[in-house]
Image (cartoon, rainbow, N blue to C red; front, side, top):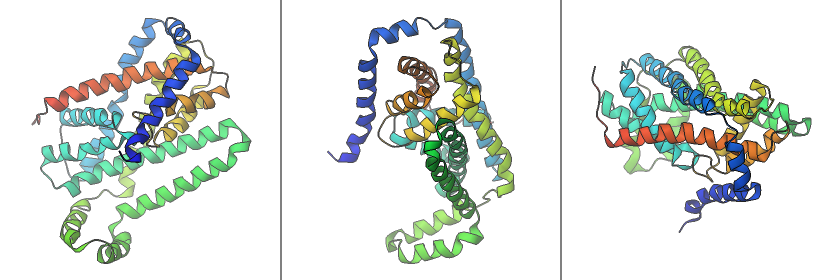
Length: 311
């Protein structure tokens, strides 16, 4: 078995270690402190939280001249959430390309452009939040802030370069000529042309970027509701920034759905504000069950019953 196939197991080992270190009885006692009303609130919030990312994706597609029903986008989003949650680094979310192709009957190159743009916007917003999280920890980690800031600038410039065909044509032509094997040249050229068909302009992505920020804040509201339920006093914006920093860490492909790496990083980050390890795990687990499992189960069911909804 290859080492990369074993990497996702690391997160599970970390998670089991944390559970055993805290104690199952301690976690059960903490869970019993949660008023069921907070679970119901978050159950509603789960479905509210998926509205902005779907709307954002629809706007990107409309800028590409594609009019697709919200029903189809909702189905594809939930299916991709399921696959994203069972793959390291959420790479499975790119299954959206194939489902979108099934609906709009466009080439894979064209279908991949809106999804890649959507994921890059998510990453850029996450980097911004994570930079805020670094500033909240300690001045001793200011070097990490500048590292993330450099990563943001590089990612943003690369994004502008990516969506501007006139600017990247020379370099991509060089890569195509000298690095793409001859047997793949025809396919690469076709996908390149399809990718840049009606590619959105940067100015049209300002509103989708705003929706991306709203999406992340709604997503982080789920665990924050449980933070309130446990009687923990921490500023909401502080919590969002710190949780975003943890999310960035979970993108390292050593766990499934961030299990283990998320809890370990949150224990350290929220520990700066007096949140105990057991409170972190309770908050993380309940959020995981409500968002990941609920949307994942629905997505799994929809993948089995997949059918394009016209109209």
